[in-house]
Length: 138
Image 1: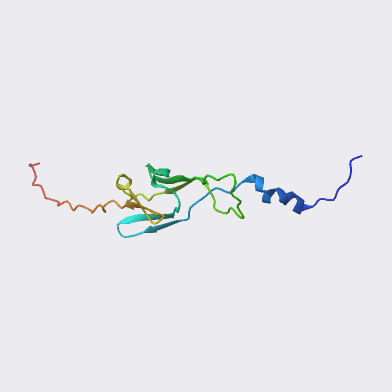
Image 2: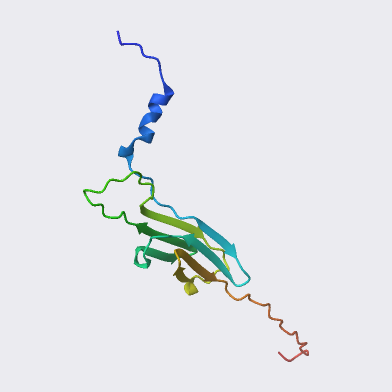
């Protein structure tokens, strides 16, 4: 007969806190706002180089992706804590119908990536005059 053991839910959670699992991936916080003439995306990406970021638009989907590399560690260094996250990330957003995806621009300053998607100019209704035709003439 098997040994009976009382189930301990906390013992099941212990592996979740194991250092062997590694760190969670880096996922930047992103603010999205609409102005009168554009949709603005601001992402906190400190420590990421411009060449490690990719901004793409496919159809009406804006995707911001990148990676933050782990610093090389010297064998003799003794860390007391390693809390900064590293890894790759990808965030996608569905753009509204009026977005001019072809004119999307991106800029980075002080660790903040700003992606600007302009709005297409509003199409105004065209008034078509009605003329009366006389009988017998087209």
